[in-house]
Image (tube, rainbow, N blue to C red; front, side, top):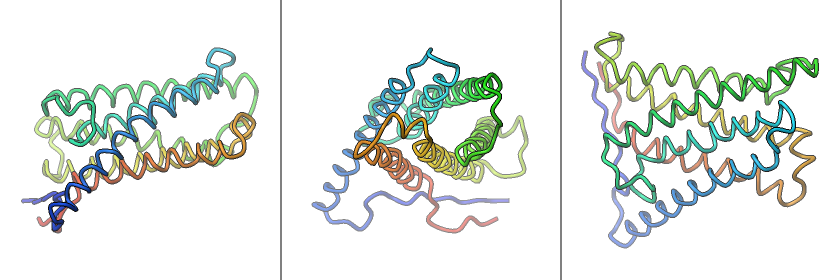
Length: 233
C-alpha cells in the first residue's frame, strides 16, 4: 500500500508584493493568536476566582487546556510570529507533546472539579449543550492523542494505515478537537455564570476571541497538512 500526501504551498501564485503582504498579515495573525490565547486564559481565570468553590477551578483548567496549551501546541510549528520559531523541529516536536500532555492533564482535572461540584450541589450531569459539547471534546482529545501515539510508534503498534496517512488523520482529528473546543468555549459564554460576570459590549468581544483563535488555528492546520491531491492506495 502506498500513500502520497503533498502539502499546499503557502502563498503560491502571488506576486512579490502580494506575497510579502500575505506573510506579514499571517505573522500578525499568529502573534495576535498567541496574545489572545494567553489573555483569554488569564481573564477567565480572574473571573473564576479560583479557590472560592470547586466549580471555580473548572473554567481555569479548561481554559489552560484548550485556549492556551492546545493553541500553543498547534501554532508552535508556524514559522510566522511564533515565539518558538528559533527552535529546531525536534525541539518543537518535544514541546508539542509537552503541550499535549498538559492539555490532557488540565482537561481531566477540570472535568474532575466539575463532577465534584455537581455531586456536592446535587445537580444533574450532562443536561446542557455546554456539558454535552465538553464531553465530545474530551473524547475527541483522547482519540487525537491516541492517533498521535500511532504516528510516533508506527512499527510498535502496527496500525493498518501508513505513516503519511496517520499524520493526516492526526492533523484532521486535531482540527476537529479544536473546533469542538471552540464550540464548547462559546457555549460557556451563554451560561448564567458567564453572563452574570460579563455583559454588554464586553460579552460580544469575548464571543469573538475564541472564533478568531479557531480561524488562525484552522488556517495553520490546513496550510501544513491539507493534501494537494487525493491519497491513493
